Structures are given as structure tokens and as C-alpha cells.
Length: 368
Image (cartoon, rainbow, N blue to C red; front, side, top):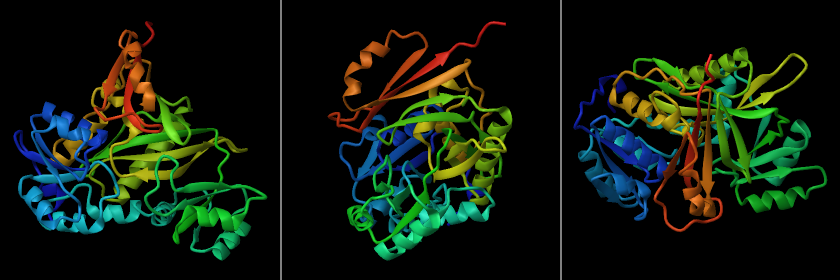
């Protein structure tokens, strides 16, 4: 395993990206602008990231020979999604530096391990409990109360792998429907708003955070992000400090997102951490057109051993709207909207819940 501080790419070097979705696509595009090449590894032959790179590997993550050949062709390896199989990460890590460090995945791939990690840092989260059976679920409900959210410990996203439990629900039926033996029960948080912080950390420990973003979800899928979030400056500082503390404690190299709830209580609003995403994140897409440096370029800079940029927001407010499912068919209506930029991911047939593209809108700053 190579020390991240020893990684220093130069233009013309090659970055390997695990995963071929839209995040990998946008990472590769950001790298190209900096004169760096990318090679994508994905088991999906229709990966949209394949369209923007010269070399790609279409193979399963269990294909050790393909992984070894891929590692041989690149100088550093990163990933666009956190569910990289541990065995694949080990094979690659023995041959090339993998950034962020693969051991971070052991924490962030498991919701219980992640909550334990955040709690040990003295950072607030919703009350939670480990659940392995109907009996332990009933015991957890007695401690945490209802309503509560039952989630699989692994592989859940966009509302998948979770269920809200309310008074009167059939507990055994809810447990069976989740089809898992490893879950976590979390107290339902009556939050004021959802926010996230996109933070970048270099191998030398430098941390740069983007403006705190407010997020709106529809059907458990992110629909709209706005920066900056309409919260007091002191609360925004607290949120950025939380993200910086997490990135530093993980000895993280690259970009990560920390999703949080803003609570309103008797002593004033405060934040609780909901989840950590060890990668570039949907709620940071506004930075592509709304900031002096995007989250994708920051990630490339960090894993390349280059200095991070100082993010400066363009305009007064920047909004990102996801184009989900058939909404992509109306992309042309955005093309004449002042301040709007359309991003289409090059995916196949639209499906309900599938993110097909996004639009960023930059509202100019008011003249003084």
C-alpha cells in the first residue's frame, strides 16, 4: 500500500476510476481539463462514463485478472461509488494507491459502523440500535420509540433498503419485508431541513468545504439542492466544522459528503449527522457551474497530490435540479432559461427514479 503523500501525478498520467456512472463520467471530464487521463472499470457495458474516456475495462469486480491489468495501466485508483467489493479493493490496493483509502469503506459501507464512528467523535446523530431479529427489533423500539426508521446496514440508497415504522404497524411483517439479518433502527428526526456539506481533504491535511447546501427529496430521491442553505452563519460554520472533523478523523483524501439534519429546539437549531458518502455527491453537482472549482475537480486535485482550490460561489444563489426518469425528455425547455446549464448523463432508457441528468441555475448577485 502506497502512502497517499507520495502520490504526485503530472499531466499525462492516468487515474483509474471504479464505477462507470454519471459520477465517474464527471470525474473523468474534470480530469481531462487538467490534462490527466482516466480509465474506467465497470461491469456494466452501458456505463455512461465509457463515453468520455479513451480506455475502459468492462469486467466483473470478481475478475482478478482484469483488476490486475487495470491496475497496471493506471497511476492511482479512485471510485465513484462506495460499495466496491472488499476483495477487489484489496487486489488493487496491493498494486496501486487507492484513494480514498479502502479501509475507509469498512466504516462507510456499514451504517452501524458509521454511526459508531461519528458518535465516538462526539458528533450528534439520531438515536440508533443494532437489529438482527424481530426480537431485537422490538427491544430497540422500546428504547428508541416510534416512529423510527429501520434500515439495512449495507447497500441502501435513494430510499431503498429502509422502512418507517409507526404505532400499530406489524413489526414482524416489517422485518420480513426488509429481507435482511443485519439492520439498524434509527429514531425518526422531526427536522427543520436537510443539509449537506461537500468537503475536500488533501493528503497533507488541508480541508476545503463548499457552501452548505439545502436538499429537497421527493420519493426518497434528491430533487433539488440550493446553495447556500438558508441557515444562520454560526450553524453553517458548525456544519462545516463537523464535515472537516470527520474527514480529518478518517485521514481522508478526496471529496466526501456529510448529510445532516437541522433541528429546531429550545436552545436554537443544531445539526445531527445522517450519513457520510465517501465520494463526490449528487448534492454537490451545483458546483459544476456555480463555483470557482467543482467538487469533481477538487477530488481529482486531492488524489493527484495537487493543491486544492479555494471554492468561491458564483452568484447569489445556485440551484441544482435533478432530471429524473421521463423528465429528461423535456431537457430542451431548460436550454433557453437564463443562467441555466443542462447536464445530460448519456444513460439509456429513462426509468422511474433513475437520475438521467441535472440542471444548474446561477442567480446573479444583486448589484450594490
